[in-house]
Image (tube, rainbow, N blue to C red; front, side):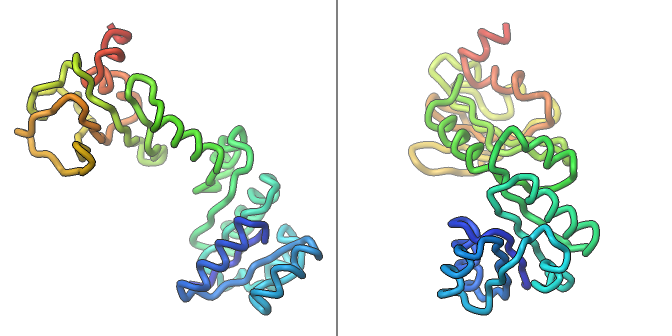
Amino acid sequence: MYIVVVGAGKVGWNIARELIDKGHELTLVESSQRRYATVEEELEHAVQYGDGTELWVLERAGIERADMVIAVTGDDEDNMLICQMAREKYEVGRVIARCNNPRNLEHFDLLGVKPAVSATDLILRLIEHEVPKYGLVHLLDLPQERLEIIEVEVDDDSPAEGRAVKDVGLPDGSLVISILRDGSGFVPSGDTLIESGDEVLLVLDTGLEREVTALFNAAASSEAA
């Protein structure tokens, strides 16, 4: 692919380095003269100096033939604008934006800039995985498809403990896709018995999270009651 990466901070520089190593062609755009000089020592012709929110800079970087644009500057407004221009003016098929402040994620969503990646949000997800409330971890939201993927831990008093997957009583719109047990995962059948300590991965329609969690975790079940 040909990729335009805007922002040569640590994130952009490392992304550019890895993509080049994987055989992709790219141009990295940086607006700081000092930073540009530093990165140019390694990437040479693959980095250009200029403001990535300026059309002529993006055109000089070859956005018109880009398969993907990645905006990873330290300014959320710039990242939104760059991705909007890439998608709407230059009809770039794929855009990825860095979201520095997770409070701005809804603005990226409203503008149709997807995916927007927030390092803060990812770290919070990891913290949630280590110290989950009621053993629940929100792994992935797919708002356009109205789906989400969650991981819930089965405790000793769980309503599902000792039952076969088919007998748990999952509501329509939810499905067990994997069980993690003793450090390894497997895809269960309907007859697979659920054990205490299992980490169950499910895909479900939005709005079913509370009902589904209550089936696997006693604390969540008590709260739901």
